[in-house]
Image (cartoon, rainbow, N blue to C red; front, side, top):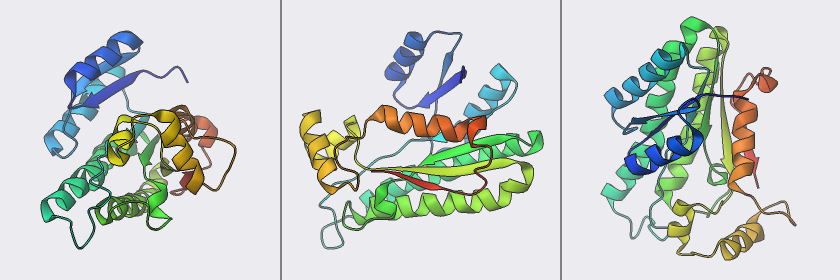
Amino acid sequence: MGARVVVVDIQDDKGHSLCAALGPAVASYVHCDVTNKSDVKHAVDTAVYLHGKLDIMFNNAGVVDDLSSGFLTGEKSAFEKVVAINVLGAYLGTKHAARVMAPARAGSIVTTASTTSVMRGLASPAYTCSKHAVVGLMRCAAAELGPFRVRANCVSPHAVATPMTRKAFGITDDEELERMAEATANLKGTRLKAQDLAEAVRYLGSDESRNERSASSRCLV
């Protein structure tokens, strides 16, 4: 795509390292807590200041709580943390992206959902609820922003070997984690990689998906 990227995170060291690896002509870093409306507004405004516009917003920040944290054992504080980051973060990201995309009458908003939004028993109530919610958010965004030629979609990956997933399942070996994920996946003989998710997001953010006019919960399983 040849995209220029503004990386936002609360992990400043990792964010700066990533941008250094990509190069200053490609990537810039902005500290951003996705639950803080001022931080999100600043991140979007920085992207517009640096590049003149915002073409793609990728809402990818997320957390998962203890997989065994159910209705009988879960804590209210843990539930609220998951919902704040996964749902409020996606809402604020979408809100501020829409603020600059709608007047420009162009843009694509992509949010990471999960197969937990369509399959049962894969995660805790908090995480499952949050991923159902972001699908609903994107459906609302697609309906409201479509007249402004702004698209809104989800990608719903199955388990991918990432630091968050390794911690959630208590598995450090990627091969073991991928075998476990494949056992509950619909498509056999292949294992989902982070690059596969990136390609789906790239497609939804690009002009190739210009006719994707409603919130698609694209399951990568």
